[in-house]
Image 1 (cartoon, rainbow, N blue to C red):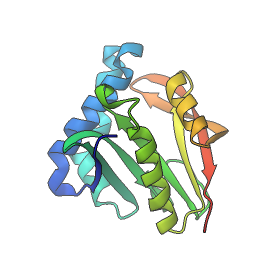
Image 2 (tube, rainbow, N blue to C red):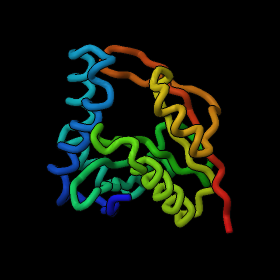
Image 3 (tube, rainbow, N blue to C red):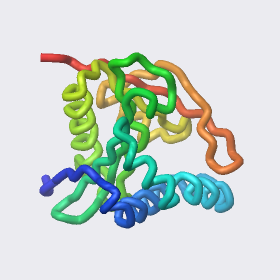
Image 4 (cartoon, helix red, strand yellow):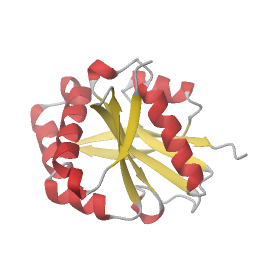
Length: 175
């Protein structure tokens, strides 16, 4: 396996993080969605102002994954009121987990989930959860293999397109 390292992002990493956010999201969803909806989502969700605010929120953490020193993916973890759905106090959300296409299917997703689990447990969380687009079969299959189960659903707005995300959760084993 390649050398995978993780870095917690700060506002000092804003430009690099923004570029990775846009590239990974576009890589993942552009083929299946309209240009207008993609552009609207990217402009709203990955603006410098929005990311700066998210990076400054003590209940959110961005972690960048590097493969052999090259940024390859990232995830955003939320606790407390930063979570996109009301959950128990001992839950942590994986709001975003995206990997550049050329780094997929080489163990990076597994490494990111393992990092999310470790981070959640270090924060006292007993459950991690996420939303995954109902039509993203590879992601749903991956999360199922990682021990997540569907526990609900919610609406995800991609531009003007109202989409359905499956909420998938995993109970963490404490030592």
